[in-house]
Image 1 (tube, rainbow, N blue to C red):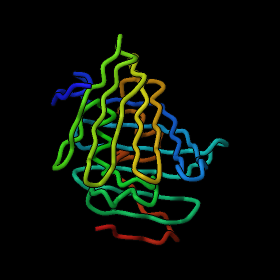
Image 2: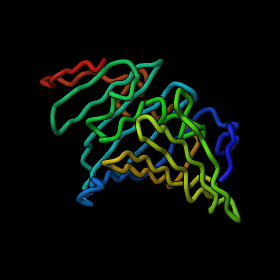
Image 3: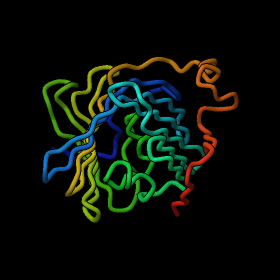
Image 4: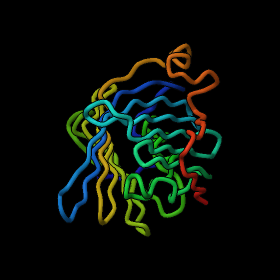
Length: 202
C-alpha cells in the first residue's frame, strides 16, 4: 500500500450517464437491499440518481446542484432538501455520505477534506489495483475496486453498514434526454410532489 494524493484515474470527461446497481448491507445481520441506478452527472457540482427496485418501481430520486441536494422518496411520500453535508443521505444510505462525494467517486476523484487520507493498494493490473480514501475520525471509508474501463465497484463503509455501487456501463450524456425525463428545465432540479411531507436537512 502506498500513499499518494493522485486520483484513482485521470479523466477528461466533464459529464456522463451511467447504469449502476446499489446494495446496502447491515453488517451485523447481513440483511441487504438492492436497487438499480441511473446516474447523470456533470463535473463538478451536478448529479442525478434515480433508484428503482427490481420490479422497476422508483424508490428514490436524488439531485445535487450548486452545493444543495434534493431527495424524493415516493413510497414514503417524503421530500428532503438542504445544503450538501454528511447528514444529507444518512437516512437513505445508513452511511454519512456527502452528496458531493458521490460526484467525486463517479468521476474517480479522491475525497477531499479534513481527516481524509487516500491510498493506493497495489496490484498486477488496473483491475486488481484499488484506491481507498478513509476518514479515521468518522470511520467512513470508500474503496474503488474491480476497475476495468468504465466498469468499477465503489464500496462505502462505516462500522454498521456497507454501500456498494457497481458501475456497469457508461454513455455520453445527451441533453435531449431531459425531455424524455418529463423535466423540461433540468434533470438536476426536483419539484415537490403534491401531498409529500417536506423536511429541511441542515
